[in-house]
Image (cartoon, rainbow, N blue to C red; front, side, top):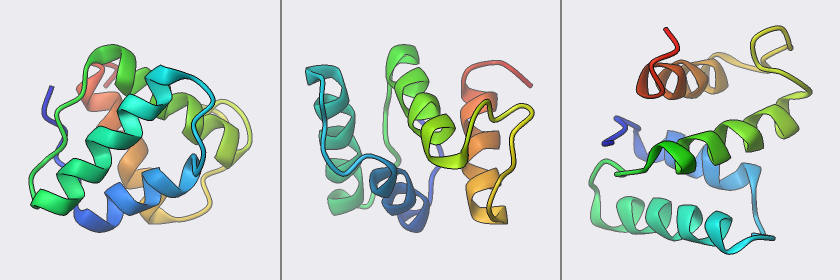
Length: 88
C-alpha cells in the first residue's frame, strides 16, 4: 500500500524507532529512508503498517485509540495508518 506521508511525517515515524530489533523493523526503516531520499510516498505492506502502529503505541503511551496523542502531527500520522489499514 502506498501511504501518503510528507517528508516530515516520515522523519517523525523514523524517530519512533531509531534502532531496529527485528529484521522486519529494519526493512520498514529502510523503506521509509528510501522514500524520504527519493521524495516518493512509502509503499508498505499491511504487516509493516502494523509495525509502525506498534511503534506509535510505544512512543505515545499505550493504545492509540484511547491514549493521549502528543501533537496534531502525530495524530495525522495515526489517522493515515488507520485509513491504510481500513480501520476508519
